[in-house]
Amino acid sequence: MSQKKKFYITTPIYYPSASPHLGHAYCTTMCDVIVRGKRMRGFDAYFLTGTDEHGEKIQKNAEASGVTPQQFVDNIVNNKFVPLWKAMKISNDDFIRTTDERHVQTVQKIFSEFLKNDDIYLGEYKGWYCVHEESFWTDTQVDENHLCPECGRPLEQKGEPAYFFRCNKYVDFLTDFYDHNPNFITPVARKNEMVNNFIKPGLQDLCVSRTSFDWGIPVVEDKKHVVYVWLDALTNYISALGYLQSDDSKFQNYWNDEDAEIVHVIGADITRFHTIYWPMFLKALNLREPNRVFVHGLLMMKDGKMSKSKGNVISAYPLIERYGVDAVRYYMVSEVTFGQNGTFTPEQFVERLNQDLANNIGNLLNRSVSMIEKYYGGVIPAYEGEVTPLDAELKSAAEKAIVAYEALNDDLKVTEAYQEVMELVSKANKYIQDSEPWTLAKDESKKKELASCMYHLANVIYIAGMLLSPILVEKAPKIFDQLGIPEELRTYEAIKNFGNLSGLKVQKGEQLFPRLKAEEEIAYIAEMMAGPKEKAAA
Ligand code: ME8
Image (cartoon, rainbow, N blue to C red; front, side, top):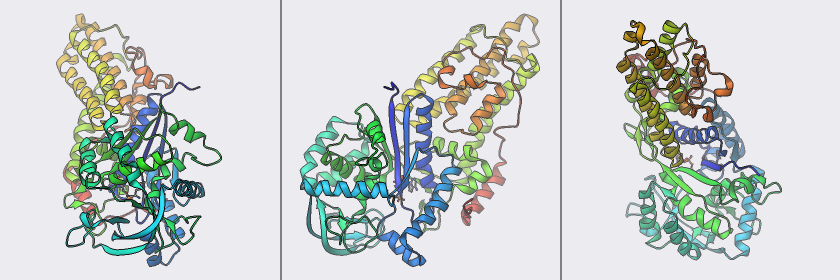
């Protein structure tokens, strides 16, 4: 049996009602950075994303476009989502669509199981319904203006026969589960919101079927009903692994094993569904719970949340085209602390790339490779241990950075983990200033110090390049090329062994992180935001 630690990470499955914007790309990219980090460290990691294709809203959008719902979602998924993930270099292992037959069958079997066990009953639903959010709200959650508490749109009163999931049967389980798993919902403020806003006031049974539209998974036992979208949608996390299907080996490997770490990454708008109903469904199925639901913040624009109606939606494409995918990935990880809200501005985008990539890592690489060429004909001098106190300090900082990086990443403090790396890079730049290799080079008696300085610089860039490789998917290999790192040393385990690089031949290549002309680029992005252009699918 494999000894590798198992790790399963998911994004929300997005609605293919329109093209994905920078916010969707943000969530998917953060998950990609996390999973690449885990794979790099030797985990048996599995990454799922996909699309949530049923529901009234999609049906209405399709009607408005004069196509069938299936044609409508096929078009958006194949021409917008899949190409964007390819362009962002997203390394998902699977892409689940809720219209996939495998998913449909699993949902129907789960529904039948719930009916059989009396977890679901037929009743009459009356409530305030938001078409946009596809959720009902109770009287106590809606104020006198009858606007959706989530999106602010007008709600409609609706009544219809519907099946309900007996939430009350599982409330005690849930509160007990929260108590015993304090990290289940992170950041913790989100847990308090759930308890105070939904659980304490008394949880109503959840509507799990609808009859007023038919774009959904039919309830086998009662064909007038389609499965209401949240039971359908949440099930994706296990249907994609083969739960209740003939081949459930992935389910057994990544879910049905208490030692597998399972993480759902979501935005705050869907916390209720993932932290209240999903654990209840799993309990009713007698399945284990995920380890964590990580609620990330929103990427906003200066005038608030990105939304089509505001016309402030920005797509990742034009940014990737102009600045490269690594720049966009790096910006997302570094600018917005994972778990907090952030605002996209052209000024901060350009500033971030210039400060961190051009001035910090780019500068360190250029200076170091140039000096190794100048003083040693491009050959990294032999590692002779730490010759000066400055060498010792730098090496110790590098070792500490690796340890901190692992711990922060394991705790999903992704932004902080990469800040550690950039701090190491800053220290290496300062080390050059403090060591003054140009002075050492003039002094015959300082040959040892100069060689050691060059060696330490190369080794620290190597470490930083590896730690940044989950973000800089294109540039990290080019950093290694410039340092002349052979394939067998391009592993995470290898960087833990300081002193591997003696005698390697560096090779100055293209400028990997050119400095952007701030004014020009800020104007360019601002113009792009004013009239977002979208690249047609390749
Ligand atoms: O809610 N900034 O799909 P959805 C950051 N189908 N992230 C953002 C964002 C922004 N401005 N806007 C959206 C659904 N997101 C359901 C999910 S899961 C079983 C079903 C991200 O297309 C964020 O992760 O509305 C949010 O939770 C998700 O997109 C919502 O995507």
